[in-house]
Length: 284
Image (cartoon, rainbow, N blue to C red; front, side, top):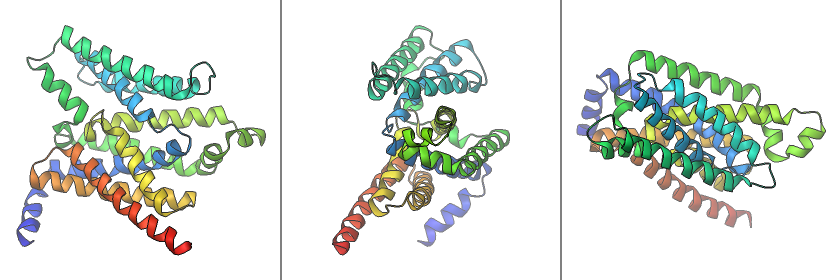
């Protein structure tokens, strides 16, 4: 145990490790807040769809030679989020079908473009790191960290400020509309926040694992709590805990950051499932 503590102290002397932990905690916190709403609105797979759209946009940015791919990735992902939520209300194209259509299409186009116009000699490695997480989380500059801090704090403040409205449209959108709530406006707000979180999370866990970061903490909390506020708070705690645990294990064991965090989320979900069964038995 003493050796592990000494090793961690040694790693914490490096700024890039501290930067990675700060960004990882903020991304996990933002993801967990939106996760509860998405699960309850039955849009759990929107993370997959948007992450694949972001992957396609990143491919275009790489081909175009842009040093800052956020200029393309963020606007395209926001637009896709708006389209997905709006299309989900269309009786001709259901939400799950729209997500599958956009997800598969964007993933295929992105991979095809990267093969037709390769930006490096190892296309497979570039694709793999983008899909499953890369070392970019460990190479963040101070400017990138402050940018992430600013965006994350904005997401948290917006969520807290509009908490009551988000709560109302999450459980009964028709009733909220009947009471005068501008449901389309708040759905648009949720779509934009989701897109921003997705783009931020790609550096942490990769485009294929983002849904786990969004869904698992919410599902774990729902096994133990029934109150919306309690579920949201516990989801945030679980998400941050798993992110920190996964990153520390990754640093110590040399495992990939993204998959390690997801495995930590799975482990906590199993524990919460067992705890939920025990609590249910006591209530009965």
